[in-house]
Image 1 (cartoon, rainbow, N blue to C red):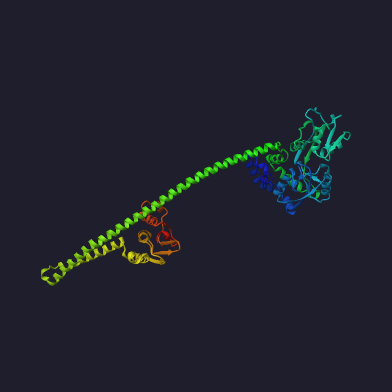
Image 2 (image 1 turned 30 degrees about the horizontal axis):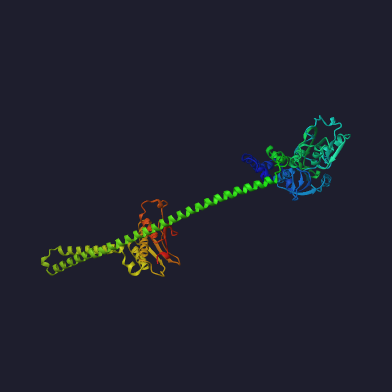
Length: 539
């Protein structure tokens, strides 16, 4: 609460002090509410808005500032009371104590925070919020005065109206008094020798000496009197007084000291020569300009280094793509060579063996007397083995270099892969393949075919899926292929699996095409592999 009403002062507090104030504020409302009786709570509910009379022109305790706002020491106490009681105060401003006192006696206002005690016959007062001793001030070279009765020939000055003027007129009617309108005028009169003693409350004098930069007076004597700041209410509002006193008594010494220091103990800086101000501004501006130039130079060097490192990374990335593309091309060339050798060598050998076995079998059938009982069945079994070997060699050749990819293109090759996948593993594979507007290069088509082939193999080995789907879409800038399944999905530690050579190979193939590959869990419940290749690099 104090943080909201004392922001300039709280900014000067240490963190520990600020914490203490805030902690006191947090706990205060609960404490106050527990102190109120049921009757007091009911009274507050019936009086949500109270008219508050304020007298202007009495710094630092109560005044109206240049923005027509209620300010001063009493304003903080009123704000605390309003906050703790959850009520609203309607501020009504008066120019004189007489107008303020008349308003409260007529019940035009409900309470006042700065009404002099001589209105006690018309209002009910609270206990003092602040007690301010009334003392005697004189010049620094003046002698001490033992008391008011010791004043003889000294010229005495008081403010009118004030608590000091009221007391002296009542208790010392024979004392010769001179009057001023403000404490500043009284201080100035003593400094300039127009009066010997100025009688006033000590806090107001010290405040005006600081804020107006006046020459310091000294206290030369005490009086038995005090100027007390109290809350006053119309008799019909008497239940408000004990409620206010509970709120005030609930404030800690630290909180009350903070309020007092904020308004009374104001530290003022000495005025500075304009030339010193200009010189300081020029020095600060020169320092800021120098710092700005240093930062700008450092930023330029840093940007240059960043650009150089970026170029190095881009060159390294390009070299890595070229290397991956070269390795992929070499692998495919080796596979093509191996497929050709299998076809030319092993295929021809198997064909020759099969033809020889068939000729032997036909000879035995023509001349059964030359064959034993097991010869023909054995030749038949050998023919089956040779046929299986031929099928295996054709499958190996297809895996190494599928002819459908060379003959019909990527779309047909994907359909063939899906068909083989369903036949071999019993997993249904749905296709959604867009037609390519332009044919892909052999390198890119082969890389994408191998990625899809490896992905389907992984699904068959690891996913435990029942369904899979392959989606290929071709936009204006990107070719996208997505393979999904409804299997068990990816393990949380799959990224750190050092044995994922299949995934690593797919990444390398995508990189060789200038694209990117991602592997995540699918909306179908299994895994989802996504490959994106820029069309500008593959057509």
